[in-house]
Length: 426
Image (tube, rainbow, N blue to C red):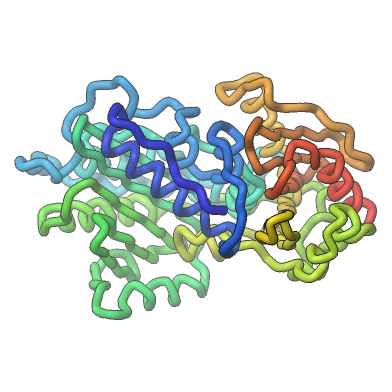
């Protein structure tokens, strides 16, 4: 899927850059090949395909500091560096984490503080002068995002901007995992990474695109962080980023992790038990779509690769098939079908449905669908779009079927048939 954001003279440099960043991530979800493709329409259809905090802000569905709000200068990208924090951040007392979470309820991350508290305790205004969250905490747009929340990942993404400049700081925090060793090693390879001396182990790598990425292991926690700004990095900026990471490590270290989230018994039917070969259909995709080439592949879709932590933590089914037909002029026309399932994510489906039907993302493009064996179904196919999404609530779990290809709006009955075929086989 090759998508490019619209641009215009009235868009700020910051917003254009952010949209491009979000859409670059989206293009990784399918393998691109030469031939005839169909463009994705902007709107909530794009948002639920992109997911992530960046998608919500870039598409304009979540209030942000980028639209019509006068902001102070964001960070050390300006000529005068910000005043240093007058006193060291006090180390918080260890907090008592709850012993259990309600079975099948809205999940809480392992880190027992929210994003607002983390920002305050770590003096985030020493890095971003006017930080605001890009997306409401806990709001998810995809089964994959729901699976990360259920796996205990705390995601906080802040942005600060002025008319000319912007800066952003994102963190993902979860319990430490053996995969953090590889994340640290990757940042040290090629001479781009530096030791930070933070926490129990840490590394920072800064690239040529005004972006730095860091891994910090401290106490029970693994932290992945990314800082981005609209001007070249200087020593002052790098020092500010390292200082911010140090304050976060100090805040996080003494905190007792929450107990893990537990899915309902009904949803155990949808727990991923292996690769995509374990997600069966009663009726093959090639039969449903009258395209035998769709039966030639059924592979795992590209994971969320924004950092090693989220790639490791997601435990959803994410499966994809691609097929090829020929137009009258002989040009290949590509079709893609994806199925994503987050076991136990009723909470995520219901929150997304409320947002899409009655909340900030409400539009006339959603249609309630009847899906045999499921409790609820919600379809969106935007006009002139080549993509349709069918969201399904089944056994307390969130399934999404995505179709990309010609005549997407007319494919709605086939998306329902795909969902019903998977449910029947399960």
